[in-house]
Amino acid sequence: WRRIRWVSRHFQRKPYIVDKDCIRCGICVEACPVEGKALKLNRPAAPVYDYKKCIACFCCQEMCPQKAIHVK
Ligand code: SF4
Ligand code: SF4
Image 1 (cartoon, rainbow, N blue to C red):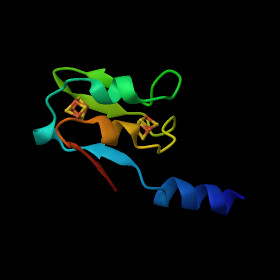
Image 2 (cartoon, rainbow, N blue to C red):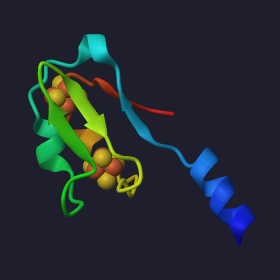
Image 3 (cartoon, helix red, strand yellow):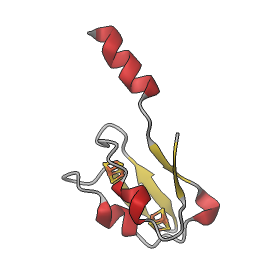
Image 4 (cartoon, rainbow, N blue to C red):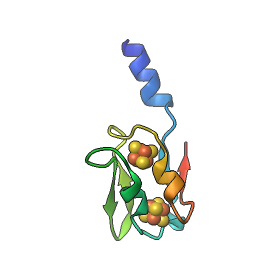
């Protein structure tokens, strides 16, 4: 079980923001369905993820008007 946790922690696909494309609109934060939000506004910088909360639903990526959110 420890090994499965390790694998999911290291290989699960997760969203990230390409800073130069982000206009800090906050739509991704609004879109996140997780209670307490898995990403937070961080103006004047781009929003930051809390990957411990992220359930990898990719709503944030889908809603971003700038297509600034990619998945790795
Ligand atoms: S929705 Fe896209 S452009 Fe807007 S703050 Fe989020 S990542 Fe940046
Ligand atoms: S992938 Fe889903 S859970 Fe993770 S930050 Fe984006 S909207 Fe929130």
